[in-house]
Length: 242
Image (cartoon, rainbow, N blue to C red; front, side, top):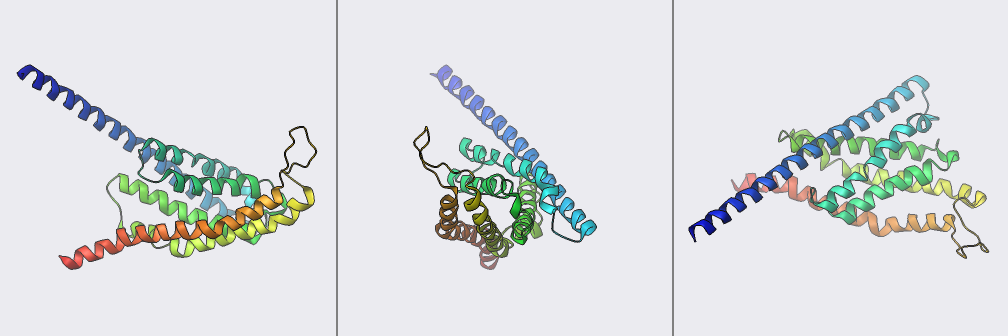
């Protein structure tokens, strides 16, 4: 009996050590990832500011930063994997919707339809995305390092109240600006008859995408409000109780 208990104790210790090792590896990877993404979006922000200071116009700005934007926004797909394997405790669906909607905006709207790249709405969502991502990845980085400045926490849970609606407005206006070009060219559409016997109209698909913002935006926005109440207002209530 004694030897069996000892064996069980050793096995439990081994399991705990393995869990700690996995946890340490996960934290190290997440720290590296978030530092890299913070740096990437800072580079993007500096490139945008430099372009505007030199040219004094937003025309041509998207083209100048497109490569950096496409790279870092596409890399964000890794975050869906983080949720799926459990190293980040966030809904796979919520993260997937947010990441994929942005990738769609970059690759299948702005990058594919060059006629809209100089629209003010493109600059609007680019500025919003950049400020949001610098704040978000900075928050995750400092949180993982256990040295989270209050102003970053405050920015993370307050900026979205203005930035989120502005970002959505920029995205919707950009898709709306793309509709005439999509309809005229028939891009990414399939007409019957064809060998696959499938019909797909990208123009109407984009309209459906725009309509999908009606149910999705409130859900994501109120999710962030609940998080804000939990993180910021929860602390205030605790302090008052003390």
